[in-house]
Amino acid sequence: MNYSFSEKVSHLQASAIREILKFTSDPEVISFAAGNPAPEAFPIDEVRRISAKLFEEEPINVLQYGITEGYTPLRDLMKERMLAQGNFKPDSEDLIITSGAQQVMELACKSLCNPGDTLIAEAPSFIGSLNAFKSYNVNLVGVPMDDDGMDPAALEATLKANPNTKLIYLIPNFQNPTGRTTTLGRRRELYALAQKYNTMILEDNPYGDLRFAGEDVPSIKSMDTDGRVIYAGSFSKVLAPGIRVGYGIAPKEVIQKMVVCKQVSDVQSNNFGQMLAYHFVHDTDFDAHLAGLRAIYKQKAERMMRGMEAHFSDKIAFTRPQGGLFLWCTLPDGSDMMGFCKRAVAEKKIAVVPGSAFMVSEDDVTYSFRMNYSTPTDEAIDRGVEILGGLTREMFG
Image (cartoon, rainbow, N blue to C red; front, side, top):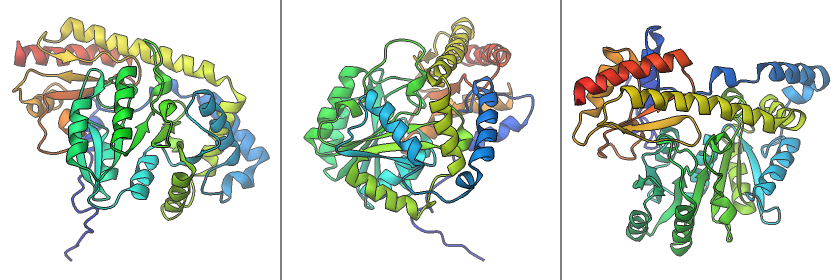
């Protein structure tokens, strides 16, 4: 039988990250291609203790249906934490618990964008969000970045050319895939442009709690004076990605529409994950846990960067992230980036993600690739970076 897929999904392709991860089934491959938290970052003993307590004291609540907006104690707790960070205005905004932060992107796009409306994203950007946006047949337009974040001049030109822009999607902290942090001044510029052209910003902040260098930068949400920023957060990188618990903050009218859209997607996020997240934040020393995560990722990032300084060709540039899980390497202009990535995994048994996986358009040219330092062991970082560095010297001198 010949299958005819809907226009919303017929153009979607499997994530290049997932395709590359197939190579990691080879036990000899050292993978810098994943985006998972470090195995040693999982609070297994606390999760075991909280889980046992939940199933001993509240088994029906864990297993029963819940409300679409989310587990009330968790929502209230996150509202308190977000209020303290300047990310929540209780009089005009609300908070929804979602099945991971990516569902915030999907629900925001579903709620606000019609087919053909323009959605602007950083170029490069997170492939999961880009595919979510593409599934709603929006006009997805990439705006280039520099070391300070999205280029405001290019953004303004794009807004002028696309007066039907509904959303500007940004990952200001330790961006995936580049590891860059948008500066305070740049955040203000981007917000001012959203005001000038009357569009909304979708601020994705899954890595914000993982800063291990530099100073915290106020969120764009904290600058929001007229209800045009939707804020997304997640427990995936600070507790466990498998529980699929994220949250979104937006004006009450927007949250109400997102609730209705979520009801037709998955009815609710799973109660066990929500209750686990609540008790972990409420009952343990959560700030001490975050400090421990930062120490883990600081050591891993610095180890990888030291190795790259020692072994990589000096013709290779790379970002120096102040937090998060990734850094971004750039080959000389005109290089065969895809050929480099293929040789790395096929010949050298080192997996990285080609930068083309993160570009908004297939026609966009990039000479960069992403490396992850959170998942591999210290020994794998040392050995893998040395081997990959040898390939860079072989190919680029």
